[in-house]
Length: 114
Length: 115
Image (cartoon, rainbow over all chains, first blue to last red; front, side):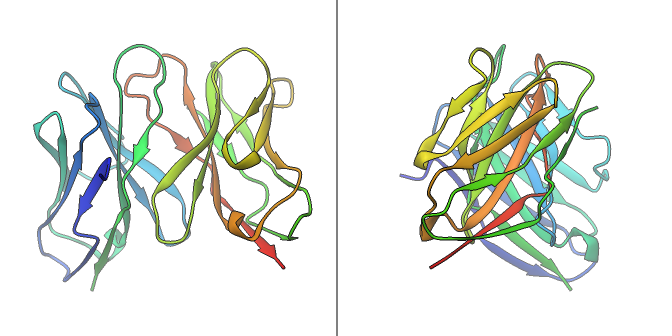
């Protein structure tokens, strides 16, 4: 049973297209995240989201929008894809509330924009 | 804002040798500290974390790390590595009481264990 799953695993698309990446967690967690890992393996937070609050990293272009139909899902929609969007995108989840709780990561989605 | 520096991008080491992966952080407020491991084509897995208390923390797979507040460091160590430890290792921090618990990662260190 996969704790945090992402679909698709690989996504190849052309510049200008709109695409979505889906994330689901079956851990009963309240908080979910999206991270971007570039070609040099550098990881950067994009969003943190729970039922009450969306925290957006201010450096993320507004072409990127998280959408959460329910607590177990956090999808990432990207408009007008650019070459620089090519990366591996990781979803993660954790318990919410005060203090820190371990984040569990999905296997990643490798996005290639041509 | 906080930042994390991993001083070595690659660390080659022979099997059964000890290893230290270095991590330094910068933050104006108190932080929590973590080490994650990423095996090829996989997601990240938490190795260990420092939240409070003893500055020496033990994690999975025989790894340990020591928090040094004066040197703002959190170096990862293992006394004897295995081939299976070959992976990318990431140091990360988050501010205490950080809304959203968003992690700031270092650039990663590739540990290459040779037979």
